[in-house]
Image (cartoon, rainbow, N blue to C red; front, side, top):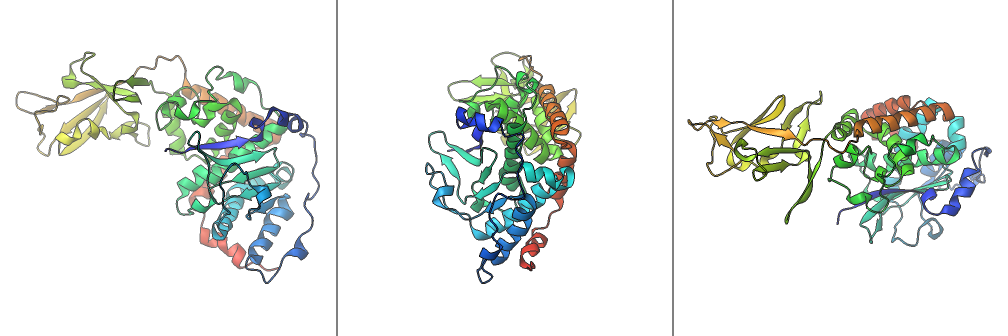
Length: 418
C-alpha cells in the first residue's frame, strides 16, 4: 500500500477551533509559559546533557519545550504509536534548531520566534498511519501551540532528501499554518484555484510524480486538498526544495497531460509518438513524463524510453531539434530487431529517428503562472505582516542543507557544561 503524507492543522480538525485561533493574533507571551526546570535536572541521568542542551537552546531563548519522551496524554489514541529513539531525538533536535530556529532567528529575529513559534515540539517514533486511506500523517499542528513530528525512528541524517521531505518540510509547513492562524493572508490566494481543490481524492490525483497537479497550479498533491494547505505547501516547498526540484515542478506545470485509460492502463502522459512515424489513432503511443530528464538549462537531454523500444537495441542516444527526436541505434548504427513496430529503418537497414511530440495543453490553466502568483502573494504577506524575507529564509536554508555536519552539531551536546 502506498503511503501518502499528510500535514494536519488544527484549523482542519474542527470548525470550533477557528474561534480561539482567530482571536489570538494580539496575544503576548511572557518569557516562558513553563515552570523553571533547572533544579529538576538530574546530573547523574543518562539524558542529562541532552536535557540541559534543550533547556538552553529551546526553552530559555524561544519559550519552546522540546518533548522527546512520549506519555499517553501526548499521543493520539487512534494510532498505535511508539516513543522516539533517544539518539534519533538528539539528531532531530540539533537539525531542527540548526535548519529552522537558527534560520528564522538570523533572518527575522528571536522576538518573532518567541511570540509565534509553537510552544511544544512533540516527537513520536513511529508513523501515524491511517488504515482507511493508506495515508501517513507526518505532522500535526494543534492550535498554534503544539507541533507533533511522527516517524522519528526512521530518521537518517545521511539521507537528507528523506529528512528534508519529512521533519524539516513539516516544520516549515506547520509554522506557516501558525502564522496564518494569527494573521490572515490575502483572500486573493484562495481565488486562484477556485473549483480545483479536492479534499477527498487529492492523494489519487494524476500521475505519481505530481506533474498533473503542478499543471493545475499546485506545488504538491497535498496542496490541492485545501486552500490553507495549498498556502502552507507553497511556502514550505519553496524554502526546502532545491533549485532543481523547484524548477522541475515549474517545468511539469507547463506541460500538457493526457489521461490514457484502457483495459490494462490508467495513467497520465505528456508525450507521445507514432509507430513507424505513421500518424493515426491506431499507431499513437503515449510515453510517461517520468521518462523525461532535463538538463540544467531545462532542455530535454536524456530519457528512459526503454520500456517502449530499448529491448531491441544495444545503444541509445537522444537529440533535440525543435521536436524531441529519439535515435535508437545499435553499436553500428543499425536497428537490431525487425519485430519492433516502434522503429523505422531505411532501405539499408539504418534507423530513421522516431519523432516524439508533447501533449497539447488544452485545460486553459497556466499552472506555472498560478504557482508563481501564489508564491508572490505569500512572499509579500510574510514581508508586510511579519517582517519575514522569504527569499532570505530560503537562501539560508539551502546553504545550511548543503553544508551541515552532524558530527560537529553533536559536539554541542557532548561538550556542554553548566
